Image (cartoon, one colour):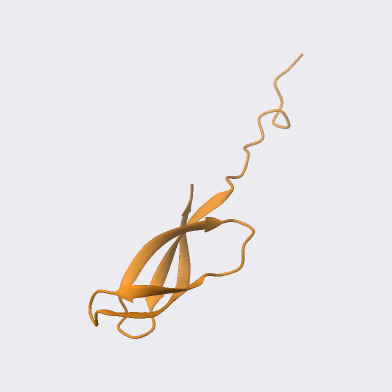
Length: 64
């Protein structure tokens, strides 16, 4: 039996590392989310203003 490309198909990861950016100051954080989930919007503490602000997903960094 020959080893074909069908048998060597690479499995996709279940998680993605994404870049989140603060709406208030532009501070950036890396976060992990599931591949099939919607884009993230989280309320996290921003170190520049010392308050909780909304962080929105900017882009996907890599699959993990």
